[in-house]
Length: 581
Image 1: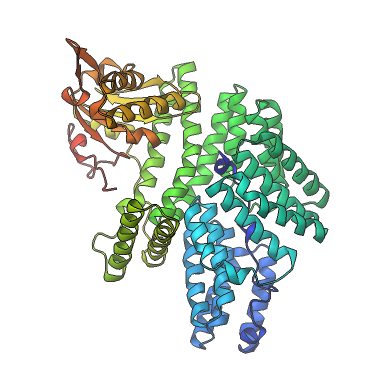
Image 2: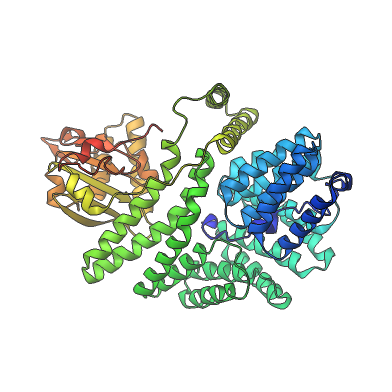
């Protein structure tokens, strides 16, 4: 839950390089005067929010520093460029630039600088939902960071980042000591912006742990401090409190806070993912039954999200983490469009919901399809290390084995980030008309999506798109867990459990789908783990008839578009692909 509202700006928890005591003045002063002057201009542009100029200038100056053999200056320039890129939400490019910067720092034997760059990388990984990768990137180099500077503006981000990681990996209680340390530093600094940052982080972590009372208390403290100090991050704290109030059932105050948060964005240069603001305002509108307005905001959220997504998928592990958090935006839009369809009967809303359900899955799978087909020796070595670590972790779930697995995953993710060429975001869902035109007459496509209040199944069969309402995700998860447990125990009760799960998922399918003998099922999240072949539609003379006996099944994580424009009807089912996972 907490991940869905994490709107904290990366720069908030990114340790600045300049003035930290890490960068040695000699590295800069040994450069030619024109480079020093241009670097000084870049620093000024960075403070003014001119991030595109900063990124381009620092990349150019880093190239000149490299020619001069000044790897320390090159590292600092690249790290500054990467920070500007992260503020522009160019996450993949920022991660690649940070990796280059760290390599230069290591070449210069400047271990404190390499540690600080790793801290920045860890923040990017965390922001994208790759918590284990974030923890591993930080753990390997945390020791030099603790000896940097006693200034609160450097210590507090370090404590808060460790608190966020502890909360995600071990629970809110594990974050307590880190939050307390950050709070002590903030209070002693008498800096209201630093204190507000601590309260804002604490509010988010309490919200993620469903401690809404504590979350509301800390969010209101952050808002009070940010109003008084003119903090540009007031909008983020307002949005956090909006989500808290919506979870507490007060949709009216949630909407009021969300509208104020969106309004605050116009007063400052937006430096945060805007899609979250429109997503959460839309959800508050939906809770009040204002569905057309909610749909407007969710469409705006998707439009703000789309340009960011190609930046996230160059590394398979990190990209899939990020895409999983984006699923919330598409799920909200599908739910609202489905409700509008049910209320009005307008088929356009149903088609919009179906398209949104497919779009996220298509983009998520882009990284899997774009993997190395013929890996070079270095990639093959990383892959072998990962496979060995996975086997060891399966044999013994010791802390050392799990740490080795995390390190292997991070190593291969960073190799993919640094070595893969740019690829266009070519994998988009096909249009509904094209799918219908190429779908075999005896085939049905069933898209399943679990949701907290209700779940959905979209069915394509015999030229029609149909919507079915399914039980909420809690009920489906319970049925799924029960069925798998009985199957693993080889229990006679597995058949009845399989029938109950089949009934919940497929009893409301249209007759056209039940008459088809080929089913492609596109499940959502935990529904992917269901052994669909073992579901039981009916019993004959007391004996179960399994689904696999009635239909040919294909389970796929996404729907690939037909590969040619001249497809003839009846060819799509054979062309739908399931990537190797």
